[in-house]
Each structure stands twice: as structure tokens, then as C-alpha cells.
Image (tube, rainbow, N blue to C red):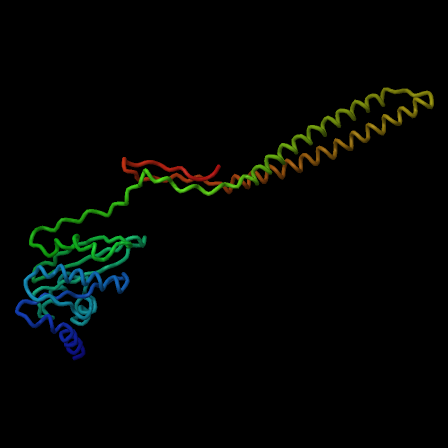
Length: 280
């Protein structure tokens, strides 16, 4: 009884379509597309269906809900015929409007049955296009000839006269600082090595000296002080140069890790090309 009552509601909602001798009923499109978009697409399907003989009307609910009331599986082709017979119409037009996973297009699939195997047309509508733009692709569904697949949506050609957008400026300060630290560290190590060499020469003079007078002992002490100073200066310069060079090397490594290069195909009026972007 519940099924009969629900079917009566469906028949009442579609009563304008049952008034004439020949009846064509367009059911609202199902699918996960926006409700307003599906409403406008359903209106487009109804306009196209007017080429058929008979009174064309729009039903109150989609094919899936109507099939549930009738009690058939909407995924099976035979269900369309059962729904058409249950609604008492000569032709039934139904379909779906669903978004692609990428979100850049809407796939519109519309079927038509009049007692024979359902005919179907599948069209793709770009998400930025008006719903009415899909009508030429759906029109073959309502002709008697064979249905030709619509041409695929082509990406807009790249305007070669338009200058490409300027690339964002690359900050080289971090890399420049790293290079300066490496150069400075290397210079400090070099000067430190020269200081060690000078201290070694002084130490050789100290080892070879044989002082016998007070003046010679004072000169020897002066050599020892100079040798010690040169040795300590070499230690400080070499250690400081290694630390500064290590910091520069680590900073340069981090800077290189943060720079990427991207290679992407580009469609032009004359064919295809590759675009190289990034910083290095």
C-alpha cells in the first residue's frame, strides 16, 4: 500500500504530463552537481526535448527516487522501462550531472527511452561555462539518427603575444652570506697556517741559539715571546676559519635545498613546448 501511495504522489506531481495523447516526461537530473546547476541543466534538457512529438513536461523528482518508488534498481537498463510504464508516459528522459574528481568539469549524462533500449549521450561542461553551453552536445539524443560523441573540451590556446607573468624575485642574500663565510673562513685558515709557519721558523732559531751574554738571553726571550704569539695567533685563526667556513658551508647547503626547478608542458598555437621554472 505504501508503494502504491508513493506512486500516486509521483503521478500527481507529473499530472500535467499525462494530459495529452502523447506524453514526454523529463525527470530532474540526479547527481552530485550543485542543485541550481542541475535545475538549469534540466531546463536545457526540456528545451531540447520539445523537438519530440507530444507535450513535454518536467517531473517532480529525479529518476533514482522515482525508481525507488516503483521498486526497481535504477542502475539496471530495464528499470527505465518499468518507470516509464508506471508513470504512463510515451517517452521518458532522465540523467545525471556530476562533478569530476578534479573539479574542473561537470559530466552530464542524459538518457531517453520510449519502449526500446535507452539511448544515451554524455557531454562534458567546463565548470566556468554556462549550463546552456551543453545543449549542442545533448541535441543528438533527440534526433532519430545515430548519436555521435561530442568533441572533447580543448584547453584554451596560449596567447604567444601576451608576455608571461614576471617571476617572483629570488632572494640571494642567504647564498651570498654563505659564500662570504666560506671565503672568509678559507682566508683565516690560510693566514693561520702562515702564522704557524712563522712560529716554526722562530722556534728553529730558538733551538739553534746558544746565548752566553745578557743581551743574547734577552734576545732569546724576545724570540720565544714572538714564537708563542705567532703560534697562538695561528691557533685562533685556524679554529676561527674552520668555524666560519663550516657555518658558510651549512648555510649554502640549506639554501640549495630550498631551491627547486619545475619542468612543465605548455600548449602553444604552434604545438607543445616545455617550460622551466624555479631558482638555482
